[in-house]
Image 1 (cartoon, rainbow, N blue to C red):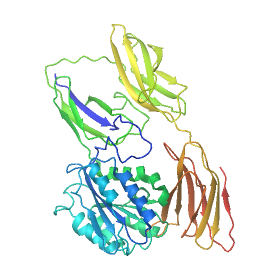
Image 2 (cartoon, helix red, strand yellow):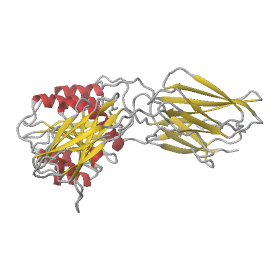
Image 3 (cartoon, rainbow, N blue to C red):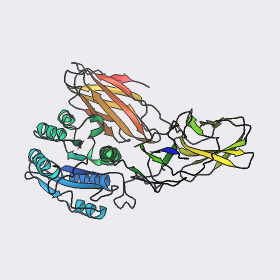
Image 4 (tube, rainbow, N blue to C red):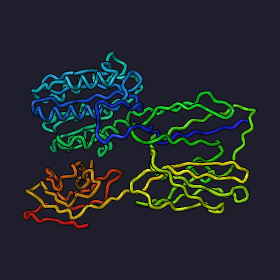
Amino acid sequence: MELRALLTCLLLSLYLRAGGAQDTDVVSVLNCCEGDVLFLLDSSGSVSSFDFSHMLSFLSDLTAPFSLGPDQVRMGLLQVGTEPHLEFGFGAYSSQQGLQAALQRTKQLGGDTNTEDALVIAKERVLRQGTPGGARQGLPRVLVWLTDGIEPGDVEGPMAELREDGVAVLVVSTGRGNYQILREVVSPPAEEHLYFVDIEDMNIITEDVRNAIIEIIRAERLQVRDVTTTTAELHWRPVLAGTGNYDIRFGPVRTEIGGPDGGPESNLEFFNKLNATFTTRPNETIVELQSPAQLTVSDSTINSVRVSWGPLLPESVENYTIEYSILPSGKVHVVTVGNRQNSTVLTNLQPATQYLVTVSAHYFMGKERAISAKMCTQDVLPPLADLELRTVGSDSVKLQWKGSADGLRGYWVTWEGEPTHSSSQRSTLYLPPHLVSTTLNHVPHNSRVCVSPVYRSARGEGLCCTASFSSANVPWIRRS
């Protein structure tokens, strides 16, 4: 009897060694993507040698985890100066060793910020598909512009032509000027593709920029091979490197995956869901135990999670055991419940921690059936306290707040002017955790200015004030 099965592969991430800081000697690299990424680097005289070295270090950390090659990711570097220079094209390097060595050899051009001519080279030569030395046909293209934000030039038109041609544009600015121009040139949404950061704190945004690139060039592939009466071999393109695991769900097409009659559910967010349909070979009788067939995780707090399963079969099942441990290799804890219980609350868990939970049914006949899912406790996210906004002059504001919470990674500062017919002036700034004040320039009147703390897993609750400019500099204070 043929069994038609649907396989859905979710949260494709591989168990690899964890690493908090970026390392240019990364052994395990991303094998997630296909696409051509061109970095447009401001190498003019307006960039100090100190800032230029920091930009190159940022590029080294940003690119280190990617797998390079003709069927994976290709990268190029175009420098902006009086005479723009293509440091290396897409076909130059197919290994991390070669790419990292090329970045270390890169010398600053100096001179004027001739971004316009650099964009002509990018559009006509490097990012044009199907031409010798150009981008590949049918694959995504990304332009990442690193600039100090000083005198960007007449770039709106050339950038618009690139976007219309299908090129995704991202901008990283180490200055706070010209944010309106930079906001207009990036591909939407601007809050995911435009980054303002101090030159010494560029490492704060490395992961965010890398993930933005991955979202554009990710290769979604899942193949089913060597199908037998009871087995099938899967091949896929992984999504992200780092600590984690692959989550694979499968079941008959007639069954709803992840629903009341489907596979396990998890309270974690999945990335890059892939699926494939295949048919097992005939003439094989498949016998399955019926419970547990579903597993759900709910009511997550910082130290407890509810686990539920079903269906209940008290006439066949003697009892259920629930095993749970911290991923990837924590101590295993075991709870045993009766055959008429289909839910339990696991307590004394660690905050902001991923666990693997397995529910096993022990049948009277001596057989077992198990089902697993991941669960995650909530993070402790203290809100921002005591935001004070004071206007300075006619278009600047000074912000000050209280911080220093445990686990703090930084602060998101956003300000948005009143919407017009064409757009709403919105800008963002990422600040390191040791800063508890900043000054914003060129802020439109009646802008909504907000500050939110950023933790490892999510943003905490922030505070907002309105920047109303008048003759008197009156502070606005919001307290948590």
